[in-house]
Amino acid sequence: MGERSGERLPREFYARPSVEVAPDLLGRVLVRILPDGIRLAARIVETEAYREDDPASHSFRGRTARTEVMFGPPGRLYVYFTYGMWFCMNAVTGADGEGSAVLFRAAEPLEGIDRMTRLRRTGDPRLLLSGPARLCGGLGVSRVHDGADLVDGDGLLIEAGEPVAAADVLVGPRIGITAGVSRPWRFSLAGSPNVSRGRPGPPPPRVRARR
Image (cartoon, rainbow, N blue to C red; front, side, top):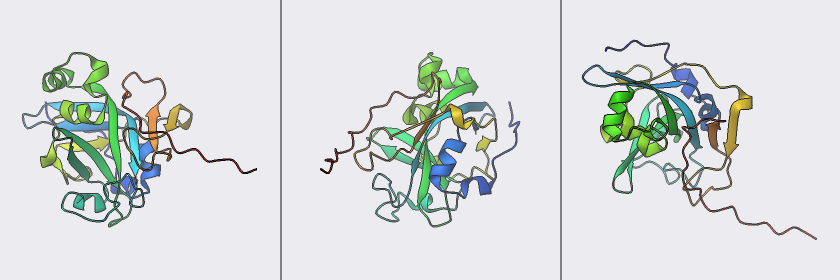
């Protein structure tokens, strides 16, 4: 199967604050075209926003060799390696040089499920792409895809799909972080069985009420 693309999201879509792009990515279709022409497609159901002024963000301490792609231009893929074994991917957002991105946390498999199953070695469709590392594994995304252009490049793209109504978007704290835990920058599709069940970060500190 070759690439049969719907309309790609344009550069302008990504050139906005990450907290605006993250909920707007829900319902969009993330597509990977494998070297053998197989098309893998999944509906995005969970995202998290990260900004340069955010202590949980990789860009918080400035540019490094690892985070260079995160500083733009928008519409590129930022892929990082974590815990010595997993890859996670993000869409770079905001103005060029800003250092912001949206983490793809989970997606609903749509096309190429047999290949995803082989890549992930699981047959449960609820677990195939449920979590950022599972999502990369199921789509065959690794560090070699760091910097891939989602707008004009080949092999990785995001189609417009059907955006999710605001009433169907759940908002809450991000998962598995130890800084910036009180920021409600995790967005997910209400009722989706494909949303991840990740470990939440610690609760924000209590604020003593004034008497």
